[in-house]
Length: 168
Length: 345
Image (cartoon, rainbow over all chains, first blue to last red; front, side, top):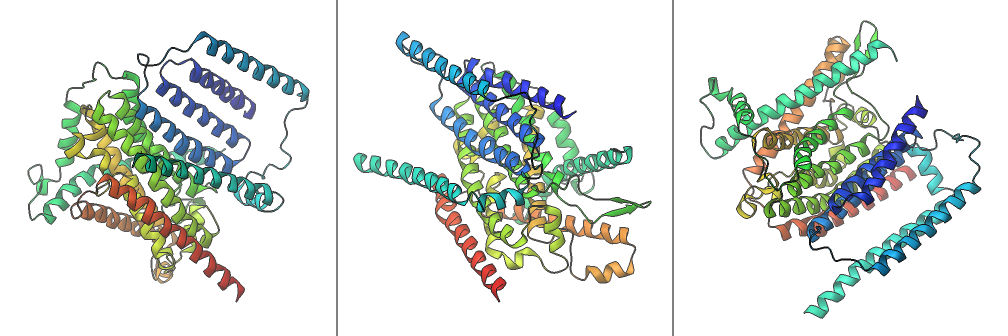
C-alpha cells in the first residue's frame, strides 16, 4: 500500500511542479508551488519523519509561501505589464537549464538504484531522536547554519536602514 | 484495522464537526446578545423565545441570497477561498483531547481523534494555513480593497505567528513533550500551566486574537478603510463561510488555550469527584468542564471586541515586533534559567 501511495503522490508532485513553470499567472505559479510543498509533506510522512513533515508544512507552506504570495500581490504582476525578455536572455536560460539537467542526470546515474531505499532506523524522524542527533553529533553544522541565517537577517535589516538615510 | 476503530473515529469526527458548527452558529447569537448587554440594549429577541431561533433565520437568509461572482474575478480561486477558510477552521479540533478515555463494553475509547506526537506543531500548521483562505479570496475578487485586505492579513499573520511560536517554546521547555494528550495529563487537578507561565499565556492569547482576525486586531476587515475587507465581493453562502470560519476559529483557539494553559479537562478536586462516580461519568464531567472553560474564553473574545477599539496598522506591527517578540524571548530565557536551577538543586 505504501508504494502505491508513494507513486500516486510522486506523480502529483511532478504534475504540480510542472504547473508551476507552465502557468502564465505568477500567483497561480505560487499556488501550485504550495501544492508541491504539500505533496513533499506527504512524502515525509511516508518516510515516518513526522517532525520534518510538520516543520516543512509550517515553514515552507505556512510562512515562506505566504511571503511569496504577499510580494506577488503587492507587485500585482500580470501579463500586460510584464516586460518582454530579449532573445539573448531566453537562450542563456535554455543553456543554463540544460547544464543543470545534464548534471542532475549524471549524478543520478552514479547512484545505484538497484536496491530499494530502506530506512536504517525508522524512528529517526521522531522529534526526540532528531533533536538528539542534531544537538549531538551534528551540533557544529547546526549552529553554523543558524549563524548563517542570523547574518542574512542582520544584513537585510541593515539594507533597509541605509535606504532610509538616503531618503531622509 | 478493525471495524470498531473506524466506527469510533468516524463517530467522534462527526460529533466534533457538528459541535463546532453548532457552537459557531450560536456564537453569532451570543455575540449579538453580549454586544447588546455591554451597550445596554436588548439584542435579537424576535425569532423564538429570547430570539433563540435568530441563527437559523440568519443561516436561511444567507442560503437564499443571490450568488454573485464578479465578471473579472478568477472564478475557480474565488470559490476555493471560502472553502479553504472553512476547511482550515475545522481540522484544528482533531488533535485536542476532549476528555479522559471512556470505557465502553471493555473497549477503551479515547476522546481524541488522533494523538500524534507533534500535536502542538500540527495546530501551528493549521493556524499558518488559515491565512490562505483570506489571501486567495481577497486576490481572486479582483478588487483593490480586497487585495489590500489580503496583504494585511498575510503580514499580520506572519508577524504574530513568530511571537506565538516563541511563547509556546517556553511552555514546551516545561512539558518536555509535543503531544497534547500528555500536556493535558501533566496538568492534573490544580497544576495548570497558566500558573507557571502567566506571561507566556498572555502573549499566546494576544497572538490568538490576531491570528483569528478578531477585534482589536481585525484590520483585514476594517470597514472604515476597506469597505468590507477581503469579503467585499462575496455574497450568499460564500460570505457565510467566511463569517462562520471566524467563529469556528474562535472556538478552536479557545479550546487550544484551555488545553495548553488552563488544564483542559482537569479541574480541582477531580480525584474526590472520581471517587464517588463511575469512571465514564467522571470523564464526561471533565469534558463538560473543558467546554465551560471554552465558553468562558469565547465570552472573553466577545467582551474584548466590544470594549477595545481597533488598532492602527502601525500600532499592530509595533506591538507584534517590538513588544510581544522581545517579551516572548525574555520569557524563554527566564524559563530556561529557572528549569536549569530547579534541576540542579
